[in-house]
Amino acid sequence: MTGQYETVIGLEVHIELATKTKIFCGCSTEFGGAPNIHTCPVCTGMPGALPVLNKKVVEYAVALGIATNCRITQVCRFDRKNYFYPDNPQNYQISQLYLPIARNGCVEIETPSGTKKIRIHEMHMEEDAGKLVHNEWDDTSLVDYNRSGVPLVEIVSEPDMRSADEVIAYLEKLRMIAQYLGVSDCKLQEGSMRADVNLSVRRAGTEEFGTRTEMKNLNSFKAIAHAIEGERMRQIELLEAGKEVVQETRRWDDNKEHSYAMRSKEDARDYRYFPEPDLVPVVISDQWISEIKARQPELRPEKIERYTREFDIPRYDAELLTESWKIADIFEKTVQLCGKPKKVSNWMMGEMFRLMKEKGKEPEELDFSPEHLAKLIELSDQGAISSSVAKKVFEHIFAENADPEKYVEEQGLMSVSDEGALREAVEKVIAQNPRAVADYKGGRQKAFGAIMGQSMRALKGKADPAAVTKIIREMLDAQQ
Ligand SMILES: [Zn+2]
Image: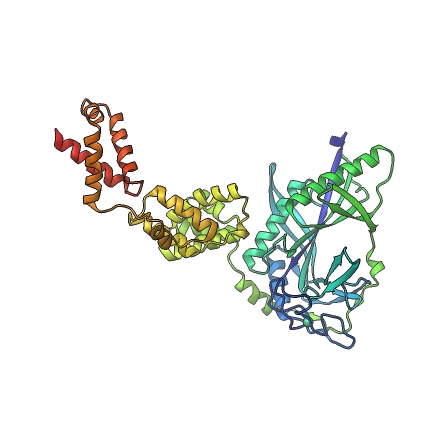
C-alpha cells in the first residue's frame, strides 16, 4: 500500500553564522558560558534599545547565497515577525519576509539514480531566540538569553526531495558548503544547524500536493530519517482510513519514535509581519558582491582538481579527503609540514578512516594535530620506528593527540637500528634453529619466514624488517 504513495519533502534549514558578535549588538556569540552573561539591553529586548546590523552577517549570507547559486537581493530589508514566547524578549523576532537576502538558487545532490537538483526558494537573515530551561523538580522555568540575537540564516528549499536519503544528502551538501566557506561550523548536536521538515504524501502519479505537516526540533541525521519514515507512515495510514491530514506543526520524539501535534500550522499573516522600523534597508552594491566573490574560498570541486594536480594523488583519494572540510584541512596542514602528500593520504585513508568507523567519530570531532601526524610520518620514514609500531602510535595520536616522539620514547618503542644489536639477535635465532637453517639451505623458502619471524619477535618488532632481512641473508649465505 505504501508503494502507491509518493513522499514530498521540503526543508527549512537554520544555520548559525560563525560571527564573533551577535546580529544586532556587540555581545559575544560564544557557545556555552554561564546563563545570561553574553547579553545587553538590545538582545534582552529592553525598551528603547536600538539594533545595529552586523556587517559580517550580511557578508556571510551573501557568500552562502553565491555558493548556492542564488540571486542576491541588492536592496533587502528586515521585517518584524510578531509572536509572544518567553525566549523571545522583544515579543517579535527581526527576520526577513518581503525582501530576503537571496532567492532562486539550487544545489546538486548525488542519488542512486544520478545527480539531482534541489531548488532553493529563498534564504533570509534573522536572529536566534533564547533558551528556556525547565526545572521539573521545583516546577519552574528559567530563561537564558545567551543565544538571543545570534545570527541565523534560514534556507528554505522547494518541495523537491522524495526520501530521507535525499534529505540527508541535501543537508550534508549545505553543511559542506557552509563549512568550506567558514560561515558556520554546522554542528547538529550544538544546534548550529537545525532542520524543520515539511512533509506530505500524495498518490503516485498525481501532481497535486497533499496537506503537509511540519516537524521541528530535529537535531541529528538519524532523528531526521526516523521522523520522515514515521510521519510518512502516519499520513498514509490516515489517508487509507479515509481520514484527513491536518496542517499542523508536530514535535518528533526520537526516544519514543513518535510525533505529537504541537499547534496548528500558522500562516505568515498570523505573525503580523511589517517592515522593521528600527533598521534601514541594506543596500548591497555590485562592487561589494564582487569583493565577496573574489574572497570566496576554494570549494570541493576545485579542491579535488588541485589535489590531483599539485599533490599528484589519485582522484579517488582527493574525493574522499575533501568530503569533509575538516578532513581536507587536516590533510593540507599535514602535507605543508612534511611535504609528503601521498604518505599523508595513505595514513588518513587507511588508519584514520578505519578508526573513525570503529569509534563512530564524525569528521568534526577529529581533534588530533597535523604536527603529530607529520612527526609520525618522519619517524617512520627515518626508520626510527617500524610500521607496526607506527600504527600503534597513530592510535594514540587519534585517541588522545599523543606526541609521537614523546610516546615512542616513553614506551621504549624506538627501533633497534644499531647494527651490532640486530646481528646479535639474528645470530642467536640462527643458533637456536638449526632445523630451519637446514631447511632453508635445502631450498625451502618457507623456512626463511620462520627465522625472520623469530628474529622480529626477539627484537620485539622494533626493527626495520628490511634491515633484518638483509642481515639474515648475509649470515645464512656466509655459512655456506
Ligand atoms: Zn547584546
